[in-house]
Each structure stands twice: as structure tokens, then as C-alpha cells.
Length: 151
Image (cartoon, rainbow, N blue to C red; front, side, top):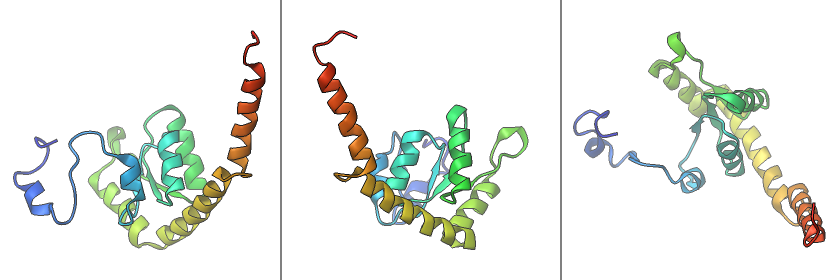
């Protein structure tokens, strides 16, 4: 990463940001109150983690289910999609455009409200009696019943 950054960049920006040179600790980043958006490939786990923490997305799908997830997230108004330019690359201008729209634009206001509503629904689903909790309890009960039986 250091090879890609201008000389002195990290030192000049250390009070305003953080450069992570390896895998970023995604949950602590998403749960930090200063996180205003998440540029994501829209893999399923990243999508769920973002919604569960109430962080709106900038969708940048690469392959497979990521494109479907991005389409659904944009359709449900919890993401803005960055558009590919020539050669399938996303320009820095496009990244700036979608980041500004998410952080400052009318579309961003709508997306932030929507993702907060989904965050509450997701948290409720995880509580005892919630839909996810009940589904997992059912799976666990079936597995317990099958324990010791051959399939």
C-alpha cells in the first residue's frame, strides 16, 4: 500500500484518517460512530454487517451474487451504486460523486433513514422471539433431534 501513496501522505493525513495496510477490522470500523458510509463489493456478510450497524453502502460489485445483492440494495434504497467506466474501471470522479451524494446529497439522506430502519428490524430479528432467532432455534432443535440418527 505504501508504494501506491504519495510520499508523506500518511503523516499529512494522520489526524484526519487512517491507512490500513492489511485486512481492516471491519466490525470495529462499521460500528465506529464516525463511519458515514461503506464502499463495498456487496458480498453477503459485508452487506449484513453494514446494515446491522446502520451504515449506508456505496455498491461496487465485482462478481457473482455481489451484482444481485447490489441491485437489491439500491432498489431497497440502502445503497448508491458506483458506475463502471471504460474498461470496467470506476474512476476517481465516480467514487467522489457517489461519496458526496451519500454524505451530502438528498439521495444520501433517504438512504441513511432507510438503513436505520433496516438496522432496527435486523436487531429485532436477532432478539429472542425474532424471526432469525426463531429460525436458528428451529434448526438447532432439528439437529438435536437428528443427533445420533444416521441420515
